[in-house]
Image (spheres, one colour):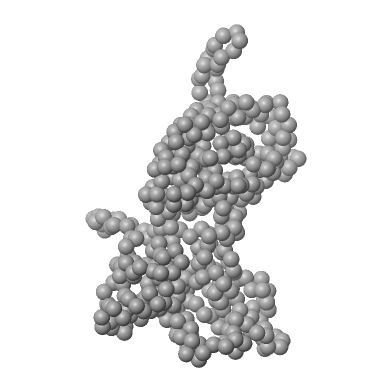
Length: 432
């Protein structure tokens, strides 16, 4: 019999770990190719991990709620055929001292027991390797203590030598964890509130907690300011009403306003590329691609932001297909991890809820976000060669939130002024 290692695959740009949310197969179960074995969650999206082989599940290495790194072996599947070499056989194929092998095995065992404190580490800005976590757990070191240890590894990470040096200088430490609860430095303060017998206490969902943290972090990182502008979209409304039936008949899809606006935003970014940046310390990273994030509402009320890659290269038909596909799969929780990564600018449609405008929070590490308000009919002054008159026009207010550390008011305001000019110049006689 050969053994196949089911590993945590790459989950997209910048995603290095995931939390196991549920095992769909038990040890001893027969597995077929493409059977979903385990469900995992990152701070971006939930994913299913299928089997690549037929066989029998013989071992599960991490339990529910464990945090695992990309490339970690999650489970072992026994398959028919000759024995094959796997990562678990490395100690036989390369020279490793027995003491090191025992240490690695002990690390895995201890890591699997850390479920009770995983949430604490996951909310820390520091990276802790499984070995370092196991030492922290074994020596009864609180997260508050660990946060204050100076790491000598890359990007200030705490290495094995760092934590062992800290332990040796710390004094006599009990070999088991103390009963004192771990203090989480990143936890938001809890404001006391009275709960009566008629109140319902609802636990915030995992995604809700992550969104809350990201939004709070963004407000602390970026200097948010907003600019607003009203756009006359009468030509666009009339053009869409004229072509939407023919478009659906030809393309088999509905033509909504969203792809029209997304295409215009991509054109605007090309005219103002310094809005398509991110900040890294004291440096600005000017992005080479225009990747538009499109905020989409989920059935549970949370939001997810799928990304339209190279949006400036898409025709209106191509943009419409991308928008419709991503929105449909977002609502069905079928997005792939790499489809919510790499955004350089985000657009959110607050008008879909009837709001005339909003002040959205920047999606880090981007520096700006645009909110599209509801399209409403208004009496308006219309200028013509024959003079001014009052007419009924379709108007939309857009708001632009931007990071005033790197985007000044002139750029923030000129960006939406250019967007206004592009949309108001829409040709009502054009084809699609």
